[in-house]
Each structure stands twice: as C-alpha cells, then as structure tokens.
Length: 63
Image (tube, rainbow, N blue to C red):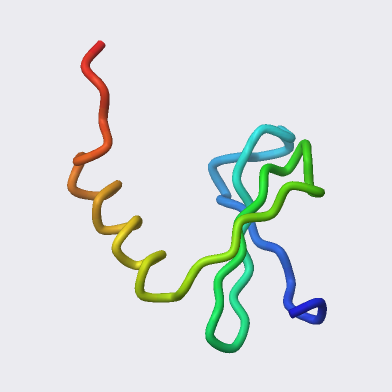
C-alpha cells in the first residue's frame, strides 16, 4: 500500500495532532500524524464499523 496517499481531516488544519488514514486493496491503515511510524492495519468492514460507532456517539465518554 505504499503508493496510497495518507489523508487527514480538513478539521485538522495545519495541526500535527490528528489521525491520518489511507485505503488500499483489502486494507485500511491508520496512523497518528505526529508519530507516523506507528501504523494500525484493519479491514474496510472493521473501519466502517468504527466510523459508524463514532458517528452514533457510541464511543463518547461522559464529561
């Protein structure tokens, strides 16, 4: 997947404190922008489940 381009949210602006993602054939990779050596690999289905949980607020913590 080295040819795939890392993307980060437009909400991150110029900050270097965000999660970057890239999608390849059969895999999704995530990394922290300020530590690109630590990369997490997952399946597209698992990544979609994560996004659904985030959007639904299932991972929110009470203040």
